[in-house]
Length: 443
Ligand code: HSE
Image (cartoon, rainbow, N blue to C red):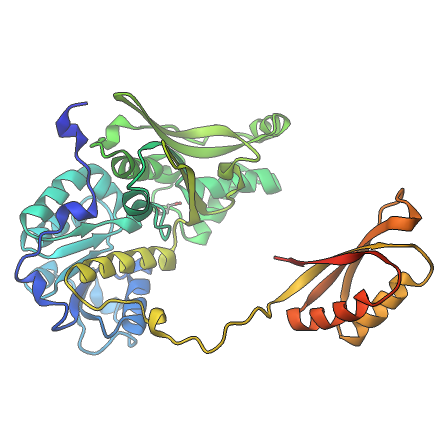
């Protein structure tokens, strides 16, 4: 691979502060213009106005047919506009591009960067196709371009690879990067739904792309894998070098055969570096049922990275949806603000904790080992009843010695303190061969 192709596109590369951008921070809040007031844009505005009103000032909301978008919960000073020029000519420090698509969003991003405004975007197709060129433009103009929300929604996988795993050499990335495909395949498996019924359900849940082909035929995941590969391996891979294969041909018969093999079928995005070759593609694949890739269900995303020194690291969570994606956008915005010296600590870090308690309320599993005689369960039930703890189940298997008989009682949720009082009393009973084992059941 030539050195031209060995560029590493990381946030640190573009820390070039222009005097204009540096004005915000210690002296005044960071001014933010929002382009795109759809599901993600509205969620971003809510987070900024409720949680970060001290640090950020929302100056503009730009959208087509803006009159239909106006809401009363956005501060009065916000300028509503359907002309991007108003954003470009404003004093906003950062533009949040949440419109999506290549055009005209790409044009808007490059014009914003060209006038020295930093940009945060969730636009995976734009970054996958034009990321290196736009990063260069950002550098030349002393601006930042961040796109953490473009891959795996709210999961901080790009930051994790760039910063948290910077000390390792990443060799392999495997992931489930498209919630729609994962939802379809897990529904087909779980409820024997047909492909088209499962697709309709995914679309109704609101995380599918406008064009279903982007999800099903792998183009959405391919854009994300392209961005992930650049970040993980520090190489300038182009989107068209990554193959994408559809999940359309997967049928029930394939899922049941996969099951017989101890596997399931998922849309897997994978990239592996081998010497000077990057193997990269998106396709349906059999994965062992025990694999983390098989255990992520519905619209969740997961990325498993393998490093030369650190081995496997798993990132998982909600890969799409307004709120998780908005969190990623605001986190990128905070990163930019911190580069300019803004006191952008998250408010929760300043909230004093009054108390630290171990008194969790949970369901419990209690295993007894007793010297058997009549009335044991009755006496335990009496004590639990005295503390208003409700028994959920009693489990006992035949075949054990009566002199060391194990059985289990599960209990509905109660506080740890109440449970501890009940167990102190129970431990005094004379039939125990071993002290009972009490474990919380996490649901
Ligand atoms: N359509 C995508 C998915 C969500 O189904 O995962 C946005 O990236």
